[in-house]
Length: 333
Image 1 (cartoon, rainbow, N blue to C red):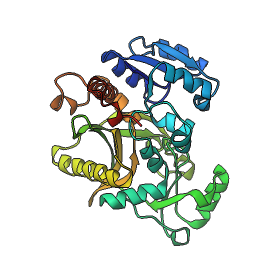
Image 2: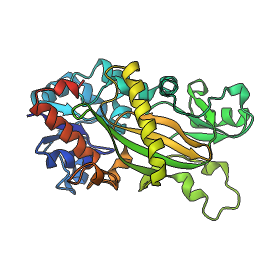
Image 3: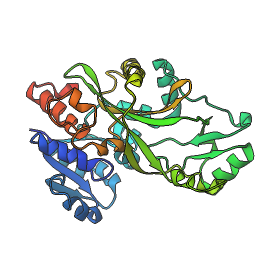
């Protein structure tokens, strides 16, 4: 039987808890400093640890050989992708990975995401050239950073000043129109074994800027900090579900054409609901931290499963079915 492994960060508690519920052994790749934290949650702590000084060391041949010997399957999450890098996951990581590792490269590139969304025929924010900045815009950089380093400006001068202040390369920035609406982060799971797309829940992210609006008559630019500090549960109005599920289906079908066999397992559409409908401003091609809200299942999972089903457990269920039927190649890369 395979073992389920991941880096001890982001959504690892949920992943280990779900794996334990399905009878899998678990391995946590961890820094010594976080081992005590995971030990505080006995039902979600890994069965064993691989202690590293730096998470990048996961790529070291001796660490990889040890994981392969233990028949480990790695589960990617946001911190995993940020620490290891999508290119290294593609070219240097030899341990089997749950999902299609090619999707992580498409996730981490702004230009590839735009191509993906165009192919999906899903509405996404308009890209703005530096010379065309003539009002408030939103500035983003590649990678799974949880909003860290993103900012909003209203002029070319502000944009350049912010890039210098933050020590970031202005040429690598994605400049987008500033959208006004309600943010919804939509959690999906594509099951090759069941041949279906499942809508497993939604969340709203709590960012530092959210608190800046409380009691401040005029918000200073210093408060425009989009770093995510937590997540809050969300239930969509039922009338919005057709639009949400349609977006998920379009993104999934486009992925099958752009990087075969397409998305496998969990993914998230990060959206803004404006007066003109949903706008998808980002795709996360793996489990997202917002699913941590639902270790016993979201408000939607009871309509699909007879038992409590977190996204972490859903990964384990898919792996168990694939292993049982001798079809692990359908869910691993």
